[in-house]
Image 1 (cartoon, rainbow, N blue to C red):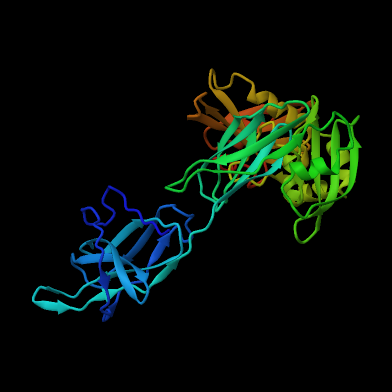
Image 2 (image 1 turned 30 degrees about the vertical axis):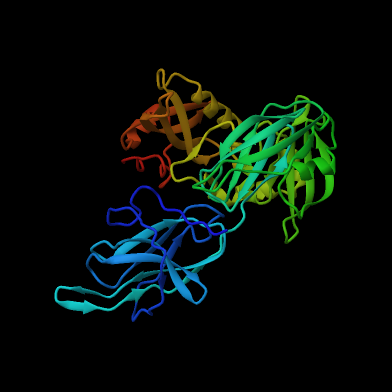
Length: 437
C-alpha cells in the first residue's frame, strides 16, 4: 500500500499547508526544472524524506508534487515556490514510487512562462534492520541499518517472558553503538531495539544468547567471535599472559584476511571487551597495566617499531596538535615515554595545581634522558575550560620537576633554574615558542 505524508507545518518554502488534489495531469512540460535532491537519498520505509528542487523562474508560482500512475501523473501535494524558485516537500512512502514536481504555465510581469517539470526520480525505500553484532557478558555492539546518526538503541535482557532494558545509547552515522552493562553469570538472552525514527517505526532484533566466559584462559573461539564484530575472523592461536590475567588472540581478520590481534583482560569472573591491535596506531590503546613488553614481543615488535616513527634526533613527538592528553587510556609506554616520566605526569593530574578544578596534562615532546614539553589545563568539574600554562618538565638528580609559564620563556631564566635549554621547535604544541636568548 502506497502512503505519502506531509507535515502539519509548512513544508514548502512559501508558508501554507499542502493540499491533496486527486487529479490526473497528462500535459507534458515544455521546460525542465533543476535536478532533484532526496534527503536521505535512500529512506527507510515510512521514514520522512525531503524532496528538494527549484523551478527556473525567479518568482513565486504554484508547484505540485506528483507520482506516476500508469502512463500519467497524479498530483498528491500542492504549494508554491519561494521567490528564488526553490521549494521542498516532506514525504514518506512504504513502497517504490516515481515522483516529480510540476508547475503549470503562468503569466508574470506581462510575460508567459511555460509549464516546467523536474526529471522523474524513483524512490526505493528500504527495510530497516537492527542486530546485536557482538556481545560479551558486560558489553555489546548494536548495529542499526541504514545508519542514522543519533538514533536511540537499547539492549534488553530476557527474564522469563519479560524483556528489561539494561543499556541505552545513540548510534553514530554508520548506525553503530557500543553499550556496557552489569554482567550476570551463566547464559543470558539479549535483543536490541532501535527506536522509531522520523516516521519509521521501532524495530527489534533477533534474540542472541550470551554465555559468561569462565574465569580462565584460553578463551573459547566461540566467545571471541561472539565479542568481536568480524564475520571473517579466523582464530589461529590464543596465548595466556601474566598469570592468565591477559589473553592474546592471533588470527586472520576482515575480508582480506590480514594478520591482526585481539587482547582480552580478565575482570572478576569474566573478560572485558577486547582491544583490537591491527596496526601500530592501535598500540596506545593497550591498557596501561598490560604486560606491554611481552605483548609487543609476541606481536613481532609492532608497537616498538611504531613508536620509533615518532622519534627524530632522539626526540619523541606525540601525534596530537596540542599534545597527547595524559589519561588512564593512553599507554605512554607505547610511544617510548620513560616510565618515571609517565608516573610523574599522571601524578600531576591528581595535584592541586588548579585548585578545585580538574588538572588536565597534555604531553607534546619528550627527550627521554632529561626533558619534556606540554601544557597544564584547568577544567571545571562540569567540563568548562579554564586557564592553563605551558610546561617544561625536566629531570634533575633522577627526579622530574616542572617549569611552567604563560609567556615565551627566557633562556636565562631556564638556566637559573637548572632547566636544560630545549632545542628549536621543542615547545611546539604548548602555545609558546622557543626560549628567548
